[in-house]
Each structure stands twice: as structure tokens, then as C-alpha cells.
Length: 225
Image (tube, rainbow, N blue to C red; front, side):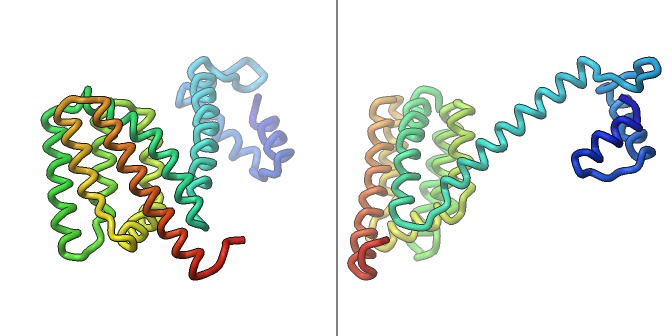
């Protein structure tokens, strides 16, 4: 289409721009190789443009899916933390098993350093939420599975979820660093089944902590409506 038709189409969609602006937009598309002159009709999309449009549409679907995932991580009640943990248990059990198969010496040393730092920080009474996230993300990276890593990146970028976990575990007296050490030992041994089981135990420990906190909270506040 030409600038006049483009202006009309945009106008129908509630986007008010001048014909001159539409002409400039079409020239930008042409210069990028996304459109090409088509006689008196204006410009037509090129194969490069069609490919870019297809990728853009796929990104929109991915963005909507990620947004839905992020919204599912909104925490209002203790039970919602359990829902997140059940998802983490499934995902991270597999990342641990894959890490036992694929982790390099450098990966293992990185995780050891994170655990050491986490223990020092916890010993000082400070928050170790960043080190907790760093350990799980380093483990996921060592799995060499980009899809699982991407899912965990969304979860671990959600600060409310991670702070809630840390607060609850601190409230009931558990220490994540002990679980992390056990998981890393199985990865270092190259035992996928052992690593998976250690991670599942870790997730079950956190779920147990959340349940303990929930029972105490309901005892103080009464049953949630």
C-alpha cells in the first residue's frame, strides 16, 4: 500500500498520523529491506519483511504467555506459595538431574563459591536472597537446557516470591544452604537420580516450611476466606 492507504488503515484503528508520516514510515521499512516499491500501488512486503513480521507475532505470543506466567506468581496467600513451589519442584528436579550430567568443573566451583558466600551472609544474620537465587540459576545454567533455564528466570525475577520464601524459612528455623550443599554433592558425584532426589527433598522442605507457617498464620488470623 501507499502512504494514503496506510494513513486510512491506521485511522480506522484509532491511530492518527499524517500522510507525510506514513510516507516516512514506509521509507524506513523500505530502507530496512522489509518492503519494496510495487508499481503505482505503493510498497509491498518483502520475504525479509514477512519473516520479520512472523517473528514479531511469535514474540507477541511468547510475551503474552510469559505475562500469564508472571501473573500466576502473584502471591496473596500462603497456598499460592505452595503452587509456585510445586512448579519449581518439577522444573528444578530436572535441572538438577541434567546438571549432574552436564556440569563442568567451572560450574561446580561457581556453585561452591555461592554456597560459601550464602553461609557467611546467613551467619551474619543478613539476607541471602540473592545468593539463594544465584545458586539455583547457576545450577539451571549447568543443566544446559535453555527452556528450563528460561522458566526459572521468570520465577527468580519475581522478588515478592523469593522474599516470601526466605521470610517463611527463617520464621520456622530452616536453612537453605544445607539443602544446597547436599544437591551440589550429588551433582559433583555425577549422579542424576541422586541430584533429582536431593532437589525434590529441598523443595519438599520448603513446602513443609510454608505449610508450617500457614498453620501458624491461620491459628493467629483464623481460616482464610
